[in-house]
Amino acid sequence: MMIKRPFIGVLAVLIGLGISAQSTAAQGVTTGGVTGTVIDETGHPIEGAQIQLRNAQTGYNVGTVTRSNGNYTIQGVLPNSAYEITARRIGFAPVRRQNITIVLGQVRREEFKLTREAATLTAVDVVATASAVINASKMGASTTISDSALTRLPTLNRNFADFVQLVPQVSTTTGFLSGGGVNLRQNSIQIDGAQSGDLFGIGTTGQPGASRTRSRSRSMP
Image (cartoon, rainbow, N blue to C red; front, side, top):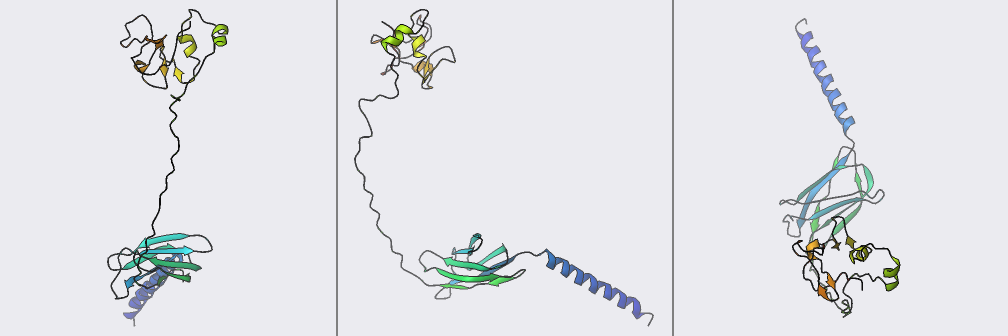
């Protein structure tokens, strides 16, 4: 009897530890899951089938796709009895099941057999109507400074640059005129129809610019 007592005591301790570990593991599980296989009418697994699990009460929605053997698994689902599960694949009729119950700590099995369905493609007619989207008389954003404004506004040397600065699209942060954010070398400056740009910045006009087809500024009379 003295030899068996230590053995019985150790066995009781091990059993107690096993029960405690199982209880602790059970208390840590807060979700369930669903798994299954999707096959066709001949019994062959369907790869790439979409499985969608949705809770109609909470709006929770989760999906997965089947593997090459047709198996799928969705885990981490909160227990509820209002789930609906749908299996679909292109070329097959979809299958939907409602009132699916997910139990805490358990993985529910849902098997699907999809039947082939002829896909009907409908024609889409695209009709375009001609509309005038280009106005030949409109060259873009522009600002007109009236004669009265030229008379009333102050200027030191009657330079057109003093008035071009009134245009919102023109910037003078570098000390030179830059229209529309382009490089100042691309300015087109014309005085009475004649080009007055300084392409290399070595002239006496003080305003860099190239020979362009549009006019952005005009000198005062």
